[in-house]
Every structure is written in structure tokens, then in C-alpha cells.
Image (tube, rainbow, N blue to C red; front, top):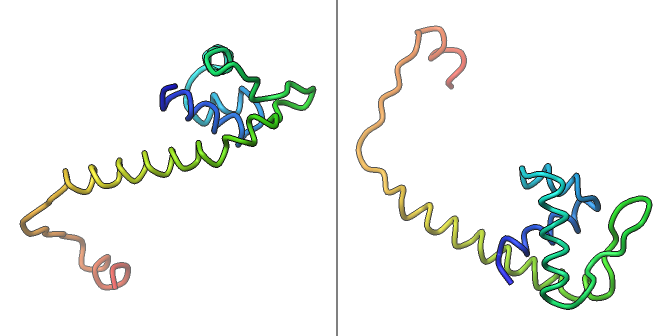
Length: 107
């Protein structure tokens, strides 16, 4: 299982539709559907029940949602840490503005 599959699983669980997940991930509806089918086949479980209103987590889906959220938290923490280490800025920063802006807006 890849992290990208977990991201798709979480996006679908949060939005309740393939279209909503696709929008949040900035990808296409068919891609999300394909990736969900591939994930379900790979793990051998159906994670969502298809209904007229969208997708609802099955018992298996409910069983792994907390674990998927932990993976997401770990990935985001790693991303934040790496981003912080890359941005060791040094030096001075000078900002100039019009007198009225500095006097009325900045304080």
C-alpha cells in the first residue's frame, strides 16, 4: 500500500464522493475511482459502500480510518520538519512603503 492510496482513501472518506475527493486532491474523478478499486483489490476488502448519496465507509473502512489519519499526521509532520530545515533564512529584511501606509496601516 502506498501513501498516495491512503490519501485517496481519506479524501473519499471525508468528502463522501469520488468527485469531492478528486477536487480536494486536484485530480480527475476517473483517477480517484480507479485508484480506489485498485486499493480495494490489493487489500482484499471493500472500504466503501456505494449508495445513491455517495460513498459510505464499511466496517473495514471504519476499522482503518484512524490508522490512515495517523499516517497522514506523520507524513505532514515530516513535511513540516523538512520544510523548516530547508528554510534557514539569515540576514536582514528591509521593507519600504509610502509614508501614509507606514503611519496608518502597519502599526
